[in-house]
Amino acid sequence: MLRVSEPILGAEERSALVDVIDSGWITMGPRVEAFEAAFARAHDASNAIAVNSCTSGLHLSLAALGIGPGDEVLVPSLTFVATANSILYTGATPVFVDIASLDTPLLCAADAAAKVTPRTKAVLLVHFAGYVLDREVWAAFAREHDLILIEDAAHAAGVRSAGTFGAAAIFSFYGNKNMTTAEGGMILVADESLAERMRRLRAHGLTSTGYERMAVRASTYDVPMLGFNYRMDELRAALGLVQLRSLFDWNEKRRRLTQAYHEILQAQGDTVVVPFAREFGARGVESSYHILPVLLPPDAPRPAVMRRMIDDEIQTTIHYPPCHHLSFYEQTLPGTLLPKTEEFGRRELTLPLYPGMTIDDVERVCVSLQGAVHYARHEA
Ligand SMILES: *Cc1c(COP(=O)(O)O)cnc(C)c1O
Image 1: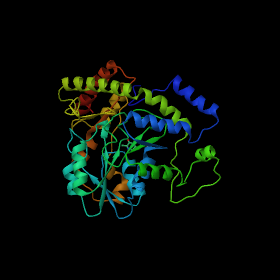
Image 2: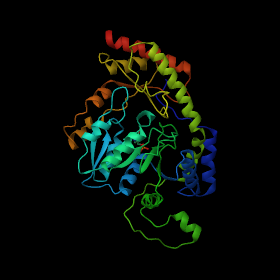
Image 3: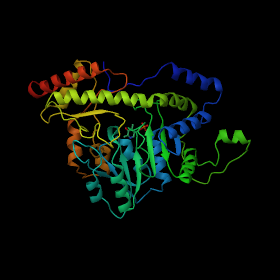
Image 4: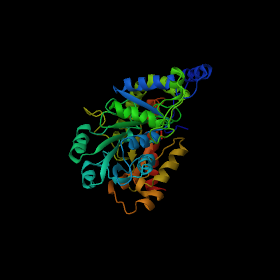
């Protein structure tokens, strides 16, 4: 079975984990610090804060930036539910914004502008599929409306322009992301005092960590703020340090596989629409090529296409069922209408893409897809 995504884990990861166990210190300590420094360096950032997931990093960032009850945060509905959930955790309200188009399924600035109210405090951008939004457009938008910019960069590890938009950017190291620590996340933040506050909030609001107290033989601590337990551990940091060394090579492999997909699918004619065709390879557009989304023809039922491809031993998934149509959000924020997001969510199919794949695998997927679409249209 060709899976949609597959991590690369090997001997180096195994020995890094053994080293941590042999060291006798497995909670947040020197490896977490080293991983933060290495991740910041790789992204030309000044401060990095490791956390136990991207979701906790999103919550921590919103909380540290003072977003809370009564505030509204603009956010795409075409994202993983964690993006919107993190806003609700603070007591603020997510306001869902449509995508620009089916070809460029990134947040629409015009729709965002139409949804600004006196309560709007921030925009939570998502670099969907790894394609980084237009920094100038969103910086100008934030200035004009006096809003905080935050990036959900879960898809965009290894893209240098991710993390340079605004107050904070949060990355994910979940098992299906471009690099993994099994579970884990990282916050990049430019402002030194905000970074310091986030470090405290990550560990219960304590004025010092256990490792720091051991180092300076301090006996006690204070808690000046309400914090969380969003710490990363040494085992995950050790995995992250190893994975980070391959990240840029892996992203380059993803780029080549994406190019092969675009060429083969375009040569097939009207089997599917390929989003980001204009962005791919365009000057000034950066991507981590996290996933390969396509849009099925409206008359090709998706379940039939997916079943047919499973018969060919090819797994596909959906990115994403729009958040505003999930039953929790229909109850919490009823009446949201986002026509482009809804059409994208109805027709989208995610094809396998990971650095261990070959160009032959890409061809096999495209041939299977063409057959499956034909079958779903005419015979299903
Ligand atoms: C994976 C993902 C998250 C959540 O990341 P975790 O590390 O699993 O908490 C958030 N947003 C997006 C867009 C994601 O893809």
